[in-house]
Length: 312
Ligand code: CP
Ligand code: NVA
Image 1 (cartoon, helix red, strand yellow):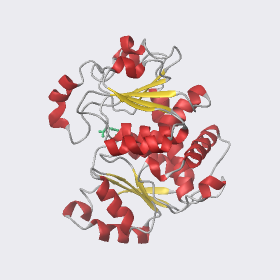
Image 2 (spheres, helix red, strand yellow):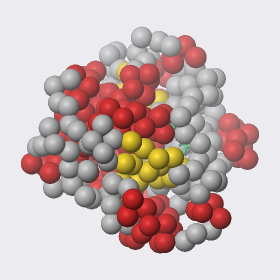
Image 3 (cartoon, protein in one colour):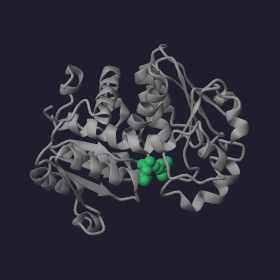
């Protein structure tokens, strides 16, 4: 294990900011090595719990397959069939699970609930998406960008859409990797000021962090153009007002014509064709969306191997 990564053994991964730049890059390198078959870390006999309070296809399946490939197992602790759903306190649940499991990946609403698990648990807690961040997604996203371009330092990642969880992790992880991150979003849907300030502090002038309300300006010259749904999980009742608010922010051929000629298109999925992305762009040769989904698996194998101190 690279020296940068051995320092992460036993730690939580609640935010992209839990890693430094060297650790983020080392994790991407390990993920690429695992994907290429150059490394084969082992977690035989280790068990990961999955506590998901929201729907998931990619995150749930990629964590399950990642553990299987590493020689370990997962247990699905869906709150509706555990005592969590009946109100057992997070603090008690986290302490009990720490006696059985080696790590827990949690998808929930409030970052403070995730933090409460981490505070009470004695095993690594992993953010599998909260309303604030989606750090495992950002690892796969920058791995995909790195596969397309080689070195990504100094390149530009533009995210077009709602400035929430996915955008937040892209801002922080991009800053850590020396990538320029631009967010194009309508007024009222900006990323949180504290996250933008955090990304700017990390970038420290090495790369540019910018927010703008003009999607064309945001996309101009970008090497990766990324979007996500306009109404996230938990915001379903705002769907129709958001469709109005985000008019003009669809990643379509017209918007892509302003990006770099070799630009790639990314989307964390699930996608709503005809809303945040056109069907043509989704299926275009620029799209790396399904490689990106696959990379969740490789990135999370690298993450689990690192946090659980795998050999090999
Ligand atoms: N991108 C992502 O997290 O997908 P799921 O919601 O299917 O896990
Ligand atoms: N922003 C989306 C991401 C889904 C992977 C959501 O929170 O629903």
